[in-house]
Length: 316
Image (cartoon, rainbow, N blue to C red; front, side, top):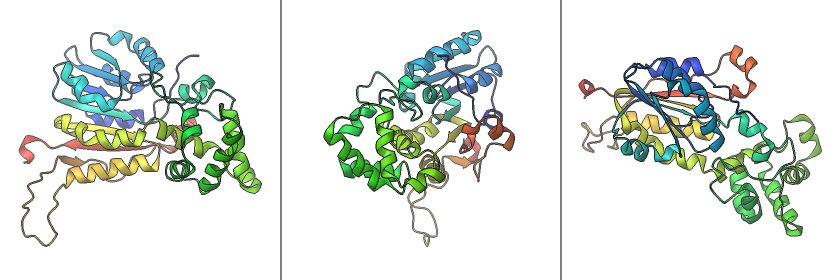
């Protein structure tokens, strides 16, 4: 199966990166290489791009897609959480720009063997990085009812989270839940028929929740973002595309904190905490896909782009 992924908010992201032809850029979620390709097109022979992705198929696809830029690009199979180490190993301490597209690729969703989709019956997997041993099957069959309820409520934002968790625990008492089809049937049984008829696919929110928990998507973002801002050179920018309200909230809050880190009480006449702004949020409101893009790629509908710029030296 060919690795396919339509890059979301591509034009807007490239515009906001303010690409310098001789700069160093990082695509922390390389995918099929769509954003990276447009960055590389704008780099001179002295410019460089480091592409990072934990998905083996994405790395292979990006190597093919970006082969014409082999003298400008290095592709690393890893998680963007390791960005500082990856750059340090290459003698890089600062970069002009970073891109993160936090969406699941169309390839991952559409390939049944990856176990991300509820539309066909396949082994429950959902690992972004198949070098890791713990799968969605392990999660579904070992998490307590309370843990399942928590992730389905928080990450799936499903109002039937408690009942779904209860049904999963009851079903696995008879036999392990091993496939996406089996899990989908359990979820359907937990949701009233009237809701199933009128809402979207009943398993969508639970599958999303399991994927986020399994791959620790929110923890990685929360733990990495300030460090990535620190890696930017003065005037450098980080562009982040999110697809989930919790992801967007993390990005918004960390950008806000990085812009105004002062912890002094509001009635203090001067700052005494000594915490200096890292830069400024370029996008006061997130940039959303156009109606044309949504019509062309329905999966872009929930995308939001936020941009942060590192302060320049004279902005002290």
